Length: 111
Image (cartoon, rainbow, N blue to C red; front, side, top):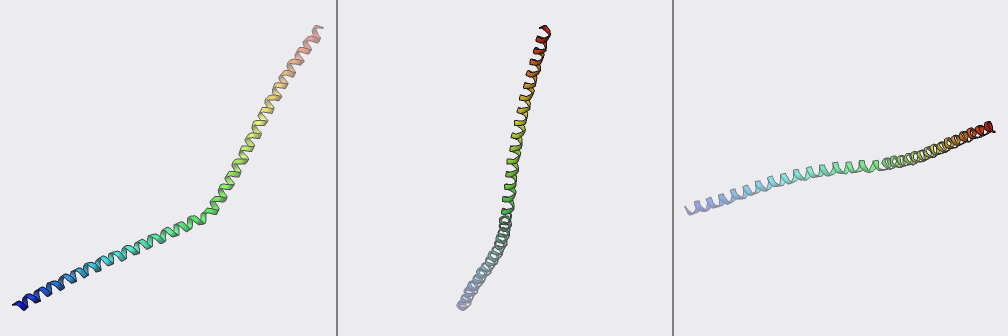
């Protein structure tokens, strides 16, 4: 009966060891799946980063073109404002000239 008890103890110990091993294997499988998933995520992020880096020259070129267009638009706006100011000055001079001509005509008629 003592041998039977010892055999039972050995069997329980082996059963416990087997459970631990299955649990460890299961945990290991989960870790491997998680690692594979993380590797796939990393690869996707690396691909996305490479695609973004590839677009940098294109975006820099577009930015330079936009800055150039903005500078040209500002220059045109300044030229337009200068032209309007010159027109206003010409209209004022024409008005003064017309007033002076009317005064001269009036003075000639009264003389």
